[in-house]
Length: 187
Image (cartoon, rainbow, N blue to C red; front, side):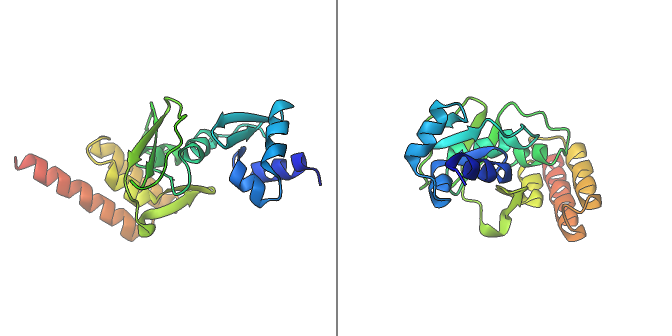
């Protein structure tokens, strides 16, 4: 199998995104990645992050690209998780990606990516079709105050009916929204 074929196979599993680190782990040297970029098989997105041009674009590609650009240990966060699941009628201006404070963030980020420095505990992590992300219930709770409560309540119900969260998680989200309503109305 050629290096191009190896990267194509890798890219089909990663929403078209190929990192130099992943390429090297698959046996493709960095020099081959640069050559394939010069030949047009890859498009450079940022430092060490590429897009395989032969892979058709899909609805989650921009989310995968944002997380890869921020780097290792980055996760899709808050409203971006809701948008990736097509919940709460979220219309993103920027894709929010969380990364712990000690992590190094690549400098070349597009204006469509917003980095928030926050440690997301393992218990609040999940993946959306292979993209590292906050769990849906954690993202719903983190979005309280930024998205209308009616939309969050509807999103929790829809997520529960689609099997994306358990009934217990949905109840926890609803309780958190109602607690916020109670606190804000008592002021």
